[in-house]
Length: 206
Image 1 (cartoon, rainbow, N blue to C red):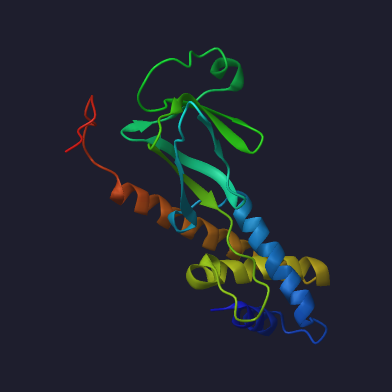
Image 2: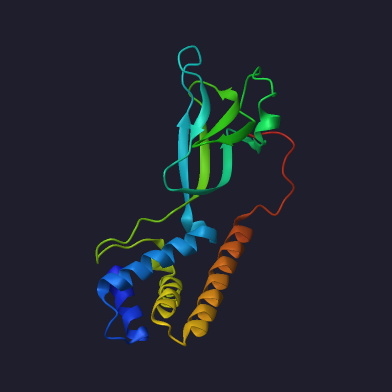
């Protein structure tokens, strides 16, 4: 589905003559914003790569957070899954030491890392990203393709509040159930893809 079909579905269920396209688009935008505040499922994941520079020229000791960033899932380099430290514990850590960066701490729009990323080495950030905004009728995103019903009922919930519609509890209940179903599907996907074995004590690069 695209924005036009989502809006048409919301309009047909709402069944009001005073629900303009512009107003319905606002409800759909608000619905997406609401969903993205808390939902974290595999379809929302993206990967951002940062490669280490020459430390003698521009040492790579921070990772820029992408503009569509919602929350972090993993930050790793080589065989090392980096560990989060609050800034108070991060700053005293020694910078010395070769190999993969091991620790990170968020400051503003960046993750500071220690040790510095070696030249030519890549740090991979796996994060949950906001979806493209629905601006024109042909626009699509993860929610319109995979979770159209979730977007529809979230929009209907906002519409019911706006029009003081007594179906508001029904719309909200339906939204909550669809949200829980999608969240459970995401949880099961992660479980099925996880390695059901004891992790090795050292990196096995072969």
